[in-house]
Image 1 (cartoon, rainbow, N blue to C red):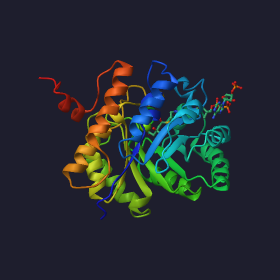
Image 2: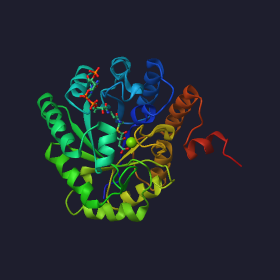
Image 3: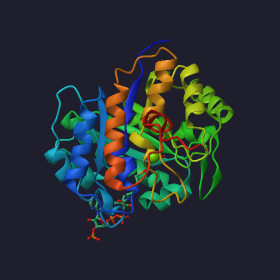
Image 4: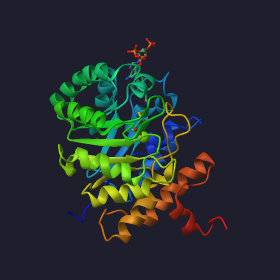
Length: 300
Ligand code: HMG
Ligand code: MG
């Protein structure tokens, strides 16, 4: 198994979409410019979704336009439909992501259509992405459980993964949207998925609501997964999954990988600086244990 691990930083999108406070363009741009200096190679900058649904992402085009782009970093965007794709293309996103769910309840609440309808919409996005030469990523939400429908079966996840690969996704990110999965569930899910897909086709996107994200990621590592989504300072959540907290903090993930002797190419100190900047801007404390420990402010 490879020693190289890819981190997909989703903080500027997943992290900031859930903030009650509307953040200005300058703050988002500064966050991404700080992330540019950490060694990250993939950063999800924003989403091109309805501003009525997610007002916090309404300025994504302006953010794309103002960041200090680096040639060796891919700046990504979520695109739920053709309009979103066209906006992402105009904003010069380097790659786009379509996002489906393994459960009907979440699909309806998040993107206002059934899973089947979402795949039909995504087909149009996939065709355009291919024509424009943009890499297409897929997400499957609620891989372990759905806030509306309860437990999710591995078979449901596998079906949606297959549909996303059929549309041309180079990778599917498996989202534990409400952060309830435990390592046993992740092991069983991945064991099932890895009978159909290669580990290089899959990424894990763990929210940390129940504090299981690092344990789940470690399980993924043991089974050969080498791409993980994470959010600087552990920001985030989904507006359509009430109570779900942020993604695993990128700082904590890097500390884990460093301890395991795995290489991400990311500078932990610079990452902590980026996390500290956004926490100050949001006037909130970091969710990263590592950042807390390094600041000497750990709770006693
Ligand atoms: P809809 O209301 O069914 O769509 O929403 P519609 O086609 O009927 O359009 C309604 C209005 O939205 C129209 O405007 C459209 O122009 C506009 P109006 O005529 O009313 O003024 N519209 C758009 N505007 C801007 N950009 C667009 C767009 N599309 C339509 N792309 C829709 C359907 C999908 C648009 C809506 O449900 C939506 O925007 N949902 C976004 C949900 C979202 O962003 N959720 C969070 C991200 S997913 C996530 O966090 C999970 C993840 O992290 C993985 C995990 O953790 O599991 C990825
Ligand atoms: Mg998420």
